[in-house]
Length: 386
Ligand code: FEO
Image (cartoon, rainbow, N blue to C red):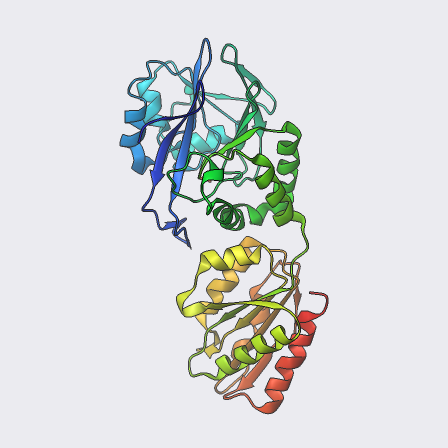
């Protein structure tokens, strides 16, 4: 994969990972991803922004093979998918310094064999003069690690945003407007990477909007050539109230919990709610995460196993806890064999979420008419002002 020109003197490099199937060994990324680096040529200096995942060492080294000098490498973020090849690049360019936030300095030396004297911390708003071009460093904490920053190329008004506004999308398109999957991938990315830190991301978004960038070049996915689209989408994802959308995450062993779940789905639809259903035995964690961005209600439908809820429900609950969505209400429904105690702890699966946990509907064995009536009443409460 060769370097590609964004503007004269501003190049994309890095790697497209067509084969990667998940990130953090947790959430599927069915469209692959990319690890973007950028090369900026000034009249006097050349700067490399980030590197790439260590698995792509040969690709990046080949792309740099005809670049005789690099004066500085900006490490926007210490996570190895962007910083992992810093030692290799530093070995190739002995004159180059690593520019990063003060917080990143210790993280980089903890994670990688980098001599501390080769790292030069930069403050928020500091400028780096390349000759005819200027980089301004923009600290962007918690998108999605505490040490993260971006860089703004002042004259060309390009924001290099690191993980902010990224998308896990392997595509031949250099620019986002040329790939119809991009915004959906960007939403999934937001859900799994940035939603947990929404309160701080909101401030980072304000900071970016004040720059009024013409292009946004993230560390994953294509370069965003219509920044207003992603800035508007982020505003919606962060601030819009949840929709009348209920997510039903369900698993059943012998059919009883299925009867409750089916009744709940029908009752919610009858009350004018949109419903998305997730089979926990084939859990699409990526679709589930993206749906959590908009949903107002979650119904966990799971039977008792051993002395607690079915373990597949615990995975979904852990995801909800970690991603911290805007949900308003959570309800648990399920059947048990010989004692309801196994399911009574289900509401405690959501510690720390600012969400209303509604009373559970639990039944012994096959649901009776009164259990189904209780489901209808629960649906009433889930649908109120959803
Ligand atoms: Fe793409 Fe947080 O690294």
